[in-house]
Length: 224
Ligand code: ZN
Image (cartoon, rainbow, N blue to C red; front, side):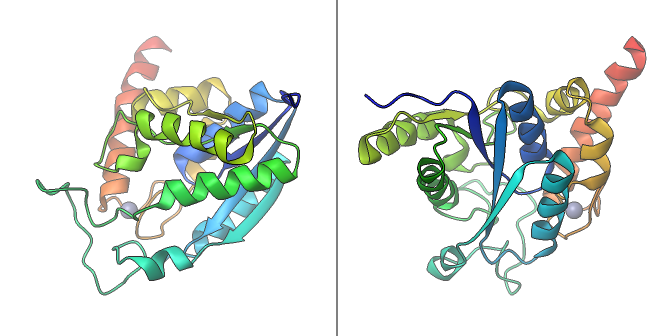
């Protein structure tokens, strides 16, 4: 049996609020942290620049991987400007911001890179709590994929999902505990319209982030 390296973690890192919080969570729990950012044809390539800048500030090794084939396989409103973005989850399925297979590809590719670099721990910022209808953000999928990756590569990967059961307000609280509240607020890019920090305020990602921030700030101010 190969030894599990508990010292190192690889974070799937988009430069958004969630994965940035996860990056600093990983820095707290592991000696060595590396980050992997995917280019998948997202309309806002700025995401990648934002991710690189945060990784540099965090002092972690940063990897970039082009997986733009994902957006050639299936249409979605994150990569195709001709599709109007769903503002809410439709009754009959996930919103058209869903990129089918995204987390499947991301985590599988991350596992291959991790194996190559002697890393056993993978970290991803997916969450079931503010469930927007993305099936590949669910705990059952992540656990199932973890088993498949281990079987497929004869490894003992552990996929960590620090945000799985917490809402956006508690994600802000976690960033605060990790002493990166201001960094997350000012430097991350969550907005579907590519506006860094507090964002455009109009898109579904901004609304969710803002709602969580307001909820957190209300409790933070009463406790302070
Ligand atoms: Zn926005």
